[in-house]
Image (cartoon, rainbow, N blue to C red; front, side, top):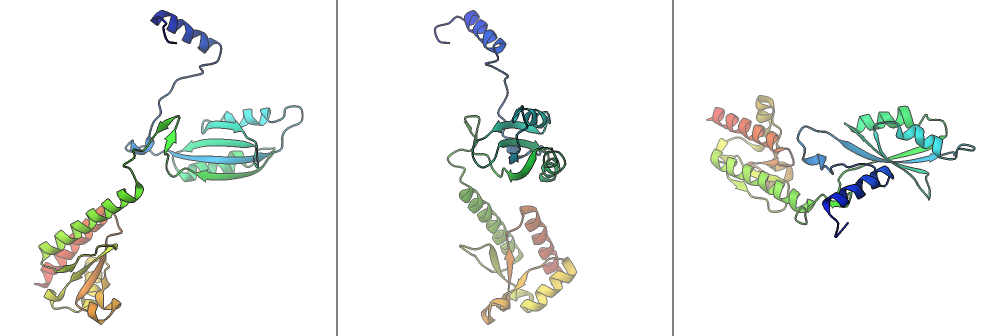
Length: 234
């Protein structure tokens, strides 16, 4: 619509809408960035038996009436319909398939594939070049490692700073307890589970191994309980 006036462009758009060329307008939303909004998507392969005289059309009409169905296509290849559905949870989608699609007359089989991550949709890229999952995970674990190291230093616990693992090796020699005694008392008194260092050999005696493959909230809570436990020992 280049070299057109605003009025001419508007008239052309109106005509395209009347002709059914433009069917609607909508925003492309990255739901993973919307707080407190759970949207689960799935792609469902449907094998069906076409109906006599109506082919696939009547069955398609029955399927696309459901609001959970966001996209429905007749496919070539090993299955007949490709369906994109949305729900609030994996359970919601599973129930929709088992209660509405699978029992439908003419449906032979279904195969559900849940969307784990969207990279591009509607011509729009959802991730930036810097958003590499490996980098994000490494940075997150490094942040957790640094927190454990700092807090353990503040507690007066020496440590072996791991460079390529998901745990910190802390020295508890200053408490006067053996690795086994420390871990057992911590478990019963504070409900925090750590691994005695001697489980990895005699040289590990006097140490505990703390995993940071947990959420930051869980790690902070565990560190607070360990700190309280050590203070009680003094």
